[in-house]
Image 1 (tube, one colour):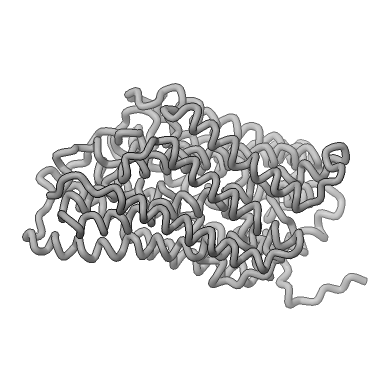
Image 2 (image 1 turned 135 degrees about the vertical axis):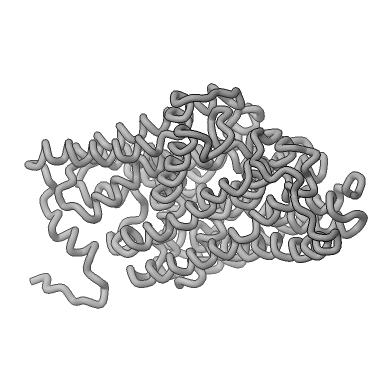
Length: 520
């Protein structure tokens, strides 16, 4: 309805989010006094606050912008994505949350070494944490550039740079303790940023006579920057023929099982006081995510009505463009500014969590090396690692802005599901897992799932059909079972190398803290 939007509104919204983030980070700095504060907030974060913080970091741009774009471009069958992202916490609640907290580890590599007594497995886990973290960070920086350009006309490189600088300021100054408050605030900001404009847009839709899309069939295109393309090739639906059925199951496997292996999610459970608090946190996250994911599909449905002339080409930014399509003047500017604030909060909160997780692993690698730690304490090492954790993917995004990494959010779930999921499930629930079995499974699952990452980079937005494209671009349906089978088979073949003390460690994982153990 309206013409061009006033860019000062969008710029002002971004500035307010940045200032609020820095203010809360500075306030949280008062509570960061020890090394434990920096890494795991001294394991004292209450379930309600932790659930909000996890919701804040988990709801990335793929959720805030991408779900609506998927629904607009491909229809309701894309709801498998938010369903999977949420349902993954049911699996995490049932199998992982409490035992992982009771392990006493700081990071996933810590857990692997404690469970398997293997420095080699620890190193493999550290490498995977960094790989998954950077794979997830790249689209955050790219998406920030796309968003800032769309609403203000600023150069595309500026958005990613702003996010990287703000994230580093918060993470390096106060660590986990400070970022916890920031991420909790940003969850509620994102929820409000979607809910308030939607209330206005719903009134407009009712006033227009509740129009429906002219064509209710699913679309078959990609967004301007590939954000709305769920698959590596040109396959356009989750249910089109046998290949579509395979893609559906592969998405379900990746999203249901990938959440428990995402490093920025797992590290937050180490911040709970005990296993019971970890379970309560997970229940809280389920409620918060269920509430949030009610909203983006409505934006996608409205986009199919009011943005139909754009086809799938405008799906990437439909959330930001809807106010301009349905209203005009100051109303459109104000609503777009609110949505821009929410989108930028998504980039900041997810990037903060990923930077913390990757920095924790990198700093541990540094502090374990005597040669690299001359005069460098744990907190200083963490701050140096934070610069590397955020700086490398930011520079990659700036150097190659056209790199087709938008699908890497979904592929990061496939990598996590194919590597850390088998390690955590078997490591927690099966005493027979050996270091050799774990390492073999990590290698097989890692290689299998990274095939999808390479295929996405090589194929880009090129079209392609058939089983070859489906199997390569969405590998979770075969790479996850293969990783599980490999870990079990190799562990059985090396059953004589089960670590000493595994029984005592398993008892620790599965015994509630309230139970007093006889250690005599």
